[in-house]
Length: 243
Length: 243
DNA sequence: ACCTTTTATAGTCACAGTGACTCTTAAGGA
DNA sequence: TCCTTAAGAGTCACTGTGACTATAAAAGGT
Image 1: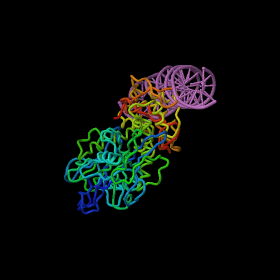
Image 2 (image 1 turned 90 degrees about the vertical axis):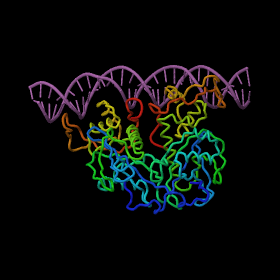
Image 3 (image 1 turned 180 degrees about the vertical axis):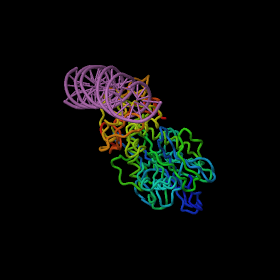
Image 4 (image 1 turned 30 degrees about the vertical axis):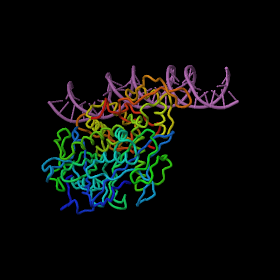
């Protein structure tokens, strides 16, 4: 904020554009899915890309991210307002957009299994795609998506974030499925249960309706997210490193 | 990257400027210090601020951060090139700079105790200030600095980053001082030692010259940073939450 | 010289948390 | 009715850590 090129006039240089890109992740049927849109115009017309768009002149990036998310998924504003949205990283390579200098602030959102999006805005189509079937994306969105997955995997270790992938009331089996899906490893059921229940504030039992079935097997008790946000001590991934 | 306002022309809107700001932290005599510059021009002329500056048209933010750091500290380029620089977060509130719309990508750097900087660039002065004597800063730099401190404190828990605060060869006492200073809590000496030495790749013993004095007391063995970057299991802060 | 202070280094002990299991309970389906 | 599936209860051993105690090796003061 201090050094200003000699005689700098904001309008003399080719201006920077600022965009937001969203890596919206969910768990569907035991698989990690990503919300993608098909581009309707050049460059990369027809290619899949992360949803996102330009930050408007009087808007913060976080506000822009929520606005774009609402526009491109067709979710009611109240739902989008309550979502966990987290700034991931900012991507600034000079040639990441062939049109002009674009700096993009990437956000990650974790959502429960949502209805199929309608392709809003000027996206030709918007869809949930399984993470491991994602084709090469436009711009540097492959990189952004990989960073998002790694970040989310790491955050599951030391935060209560996993509940953001679940509906308001969920079973411990559903919560465990989130961990197994994002980390890509199976977890021991009893140990997972013990860890979650002994961490104060991670989940709280739902009172009245005692149990619910998840298909086959013994009906499971329902829980909702507790007040805690951090996990002490953390719930570490089984072996070595990141996904 | 998809929604583009109808008829958007990059030059029709008031352009965004993109800057980098640097929270450069070091440990000096048991206290956390921050590198600050005194602004030479409006706005906030005379106020202290984080070093930083505009991203040039053909430059990535990371490159800009290194360049600005070199300019404003006068460090040799080779030293700056080897520093641990990490993108912290991007600050995008519309009114964070009264002149125009400025989006700033903040970086954090951890450095060993360095010589006093010479105020380069157009900073009136550049100095190390103890973290808890930092006055109100220009722009939203108080917020950036607080975020940086919190992030660094958290990263010490699960990475080997602490060695970045130390000179190439250091004693375990010096390494422990880094933790105690950043976290603001005393650590048990033997337990800290055990943890560091049993974590493979955190530090490695320096062979030949057996010991070095740190002033009074028994001379300590020297170590240098090992090859590991992550700490499994982590070295958690004693009690509750963030700084 | 001796003693005090300071810091490094070695070692002990108990306990919390976890990984790897086993066993029982309660559903659905063939 | 039996088999399958998943929830939930409980056991056991081991690892890592917090809290300490003890010893070693220097500097400084008297």
